[in-house]
Length: 136
Image 1 (cartoon, rainbow, N blue to C red):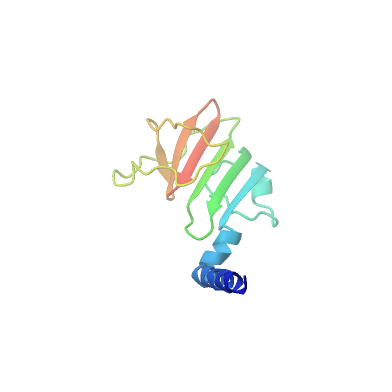
Image 2: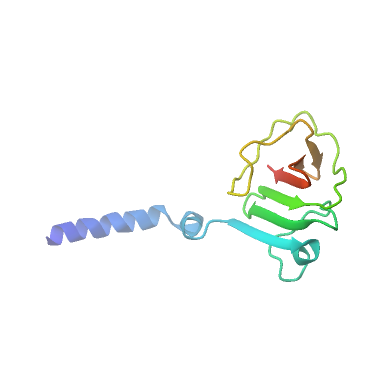
């Protein structure tokens, strides 16, 4: 019985040593953060924890963003009551990049036929007045 307890203790110590540092911290608290901002003003408030790109329209509403704080990868959705074109043609070398993250609000399939790019973000306009954007 004592031998089992000793072996279990050694195994646990080995696991802790293996999951030390950032790996253990990421296992306990992943570097992924999600926010929902009702308006762009809320996204720019002092209490906002994830920065919204400057190209997001001033009248954007219900801004959802999910970001990996270690890699900078992100996905974002927002509505715009008066949609306007955002971004320009994507560089051919990055045109095939796919969204790096997922969430329940993220669409299963994106229409990439009218994909644009702005400041490292890929932007897809679809579903009425909804924009979906991601940063690889």
